Image: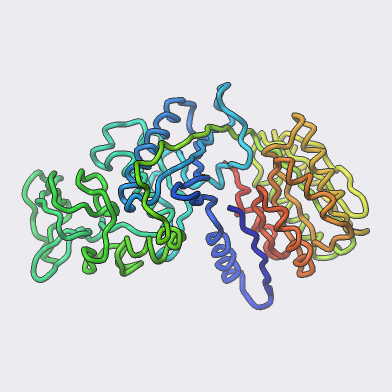
Length: 485
């Protein structure tokens, strides 16, 4: 799903910290791209990092996890939703004749990533989740070893179940019902394990000492090393955010069984049952309340395996007269930062300028050294004059991109303009719509609003549009999906 954000910022009214917070909130609030098509989730992109050596078995393991997770999700949410379609994005250096070329999929925008272990987590799956209760997370992280190593099923649970647990973090903004910091607490004079629901039976044992648990004299709670081991057979079916590895667990905690006393993040962040958050506060709340349960088990997910090529990017830069002064300076600064620090090695970059006419500053150039980067920087425009013929710049940018392999599918244009157009955008937008290119648009200055607002509905075909004025320009290059993989 594409979003078009028109942002009006007053630099004099905010310091750099408040500006950063505002922009971070803006970026965090944009759509993940995932959406519901009837009862099925589509546009789910699972991207494998370039750091992962080629292992074609990973593709099958990803498919197995999603297929298993789809049925578990279907049962967990009253048979209302499942995984309908998913795209697996493999790195450029993997070799196979079976991969098709990625179009708009990119590692930076994927919401499920397969990457080497984060030292803080090891092989434990996790979701980057910074928002408030009910807000979507940033991405789910799985390691290749988690997918391959069957011995990890015992500590974490079946992979499909783990996916649904993390999906609830990512999509619905719920939190864990266990707590590693406070695994136990007092309730009515009794020691309880932190979780949901309270109807999970089990025993305490000190796994480090191999003996019964001792009591910490400072807290009168079980000492560090003491762990709650649930019985294999239980009478309760909840909860996925507490113990998805338990065989009987098949749903999320509801209000009538929610444990409000437990010192966990779900209570601290939300103060309500996970089920309530999903159906009342999440991005899917309206759909989930209106969807009818499926009458039979859902079909298996449909998978597409695509490969991202090395990035091919054309900077299309407005050098018309209205860009004089601070705007052309900010353009230079942002483009310099992009060329020196952001665009990855082995990517190809071209540069086009436009005003009354368009010209090529540099044809597609492979980024193979710092010398190449600096040579491109020296070509950046320093003077602005003439009218603003945006279509001339856009058309030339597409022509330049077309020269490497005869098409522009999956190639990128970073289109930077103040939006004070001298031409009719309708004369070039249809061609851009049909090209298959990914077009990132940045608007400089307040007068850009009208032109770009009119352009946005036509241009949302496959673009990630970010409309910000000039003070956010270099921040956009750094943060809006334009970073090295």
